[in-house]
Every structure is written in structure tokens, then in C-alpha cells.
Length: 127
Length: 127
Image (cartoon, rainbow over the protein chains, first blue to last red):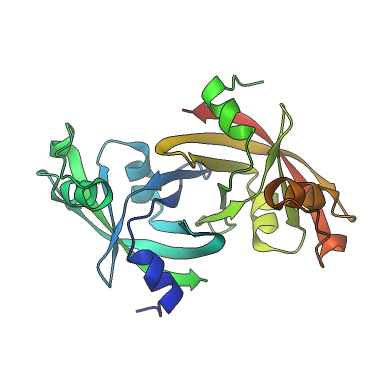
């Protein structure tokens, strides 16, 4: 496993919106803010199986994640990684967990049946 | 020119850090926070001619930009675009302008001689 410096661990342990970049099948990049949770091995994202980002990851599993420190606008970390696996999550348990972590109440989204949990393995960290 | 909705114009007019995603020559995405300025036609970024992002853009000129509203964490805009042109900026005039706009004082960076000004033309806006 790649070494995760303390500075990155500190940001990975907080409910901050990160920007997740993926590559579209035609080669253009895509980037969106995302909730995440870090379990010490994987960075987990909730998503659905019918949206563009899922198609991107099926085609190109490498990602890049930008974490900005809300208290230090120039304190940022870039983590490059790769999708290790994607689990079906038809009860949206990861979404519930993340909505509670970020907003204080567990929400079950309307698209729960199509929800997936994406596990990203970090491969390089720029602090 | 693509239509820029009012919501996007509002964010484009403020000194917020945006996340700029590019595609590396090997197909993996890259994303970093960046200063920018919008002139009504192009979104301008200051960069250098020797760093990875410049190499990425020479290979794949399409980019994606994520703008988060600092006052509304779920108010974000994604702008897809393409590099229209890149101007040499050996006096780092764009860096000076951006450092004044973001931090209140114009700075001339040590790498001024290698500075370039990157003009991105928006091609699609998701609000």
C-alpha cells in the first residue's frame, strides 16, 4: 500500500467535499465535488450505475482526487488512485452513512436501487 | 459561444479556487485547485511551460472545471471547455493580476520567465 502522509490522513478523516476527476471514454476529463469516506485502505464514494462517472470508471479506472483544507485555502492534497472494486449498494447504506457524516441525518435517496459503492485505492499522494 | 447561465456567471466573477481537471498523456486524469479569471469570453489560468499540466494540455486540450460556491456547499457548477490558445507571459502579468485579485498584493513569481497564460473557451456548462 502507498504511504499516506499525516497531512493527507488528517484531511481524509474529515467530512470535506473533495473533487473527483475521471476520464471520459472519449479522453476528456470530468470533475465533480463528491462526498467520501476513508477506511484506512480505500476511499469510498457513493454513485449510481447509470450516470456518466460510472461509465468513465468502467472505461478508465484511474482517478485523481483534490482535497482542499477548508481552513487553509492553499493547503491541498492531490491523491491519485485506481478503482479497486465496485459493490452494489441497493439499500444505499453508503449514501446513508455519508449523508449522516456530512449533514447529520441519514438519507435514503430515491435512486437507492441503482446505488453502488466505489472503492478507490490510493496509488500516489502529493502533499 | 456557449450560453453561460447567470448562476455560472456569478461564480465566474469571484476569486474562488476552482478545480481544474486535465487528462495526462497516458489517459489518467489530474486535478488541482487553481486561480482563474473570466473575461467574458475565456477562463484564464496562469501556469508554467515545464510542468505536468502543460504537457497534459498539449496532448489533450479539453478540460473540466469545478466551481464550488463558498457559501453553499452544494451549489456547484461544472464547466467543460477547451484550450483556445496559450500566450507566453514572461513578465508573469497574469500571475500578478491573480495574486492581487486573490490575496490583495501583486506577486512576481520566481518562475516568471516560464509563465504562460492559458485561455480556456467554455463549451458546456452544467449548473
